[in-house]
Amino acid sequence: MPELPDVEVFKRYIDATALHQTIQRVTAPAPKVLDDMSISQLGRAVAGRSFTDSLRWGKYLFLAMDTGQWLALHFGMTSFPRYCREDHGDDGEDAPFDAVRFFFDNGYMLAFNSRRKLGRIRLVDDPGDFAREQNLGPDALDMGEDEFVEMAGKARGSLKSLLMNQKHLSGLGNETSDEILFQGRWHPKTGVQALDGDQRRQLYRIMRKVLKADLEAGADQEKMPDWFLLPRRHDGEPCPRCQGPIRRISASGRSAYICPACQPGP
Image 1 (cartoon, helix red, strand yellow):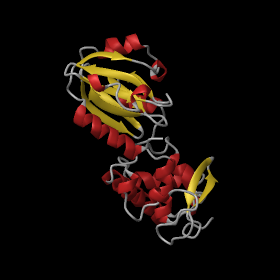
Image 2: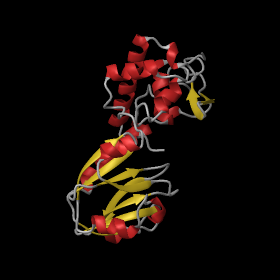
Image 3: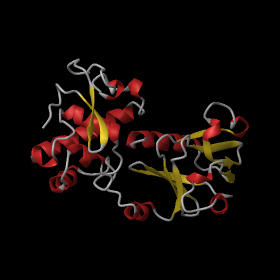
């Protein structure tokens, strides 16, 4: 599932390609991804308009329109944006999985590609109001250290569940939480309350470090630092720190990958 770094890469891609272009029409080969609206409603909202700005909040990407409304995009498991010339729109192996296509007056198009049709597009009036309606916590990169420490001090459960709970902070998923815990040498099942104040600050700083390194790599595992777990996040792969085997376990109802030697159990 696309997580904060992936969605930030999508944001930068759209910012560089699809802003300030007049939308002539929109089609929805897979209307299932339209949340609480029909294709005709979406068409009336965007025809003759343009995307003027973008905002990321956790795993959501919001596209501002010159009407004052926004499109909220959630990428589900496998969705992503692609921008290309309209006459090349059906080229390539990804084209059959375009769920929604926005056609611009310059001959290009922006597609919301959703192979498994688990992505969602919704028309909203305000991203902040939408985030509150969805009970989303602050974006993980916007949350301050003191705010994080206070939030973690009140939380219960495991470190894995803390990091992945979108009500606490938005944007972290299974992969990023594994990386953060690996870098801190914490087992995913370690209880939040086992960390003292200094350790909660350390957790926050590691989270920031991991997210920034991931973004610098463009969320591309092949470009991630040698000390990252993610490129080796497979059962039996060697740990980048001690060369011991990485193991897959279950934690907080999810699969998690750890180095048992570097991250001993609680």
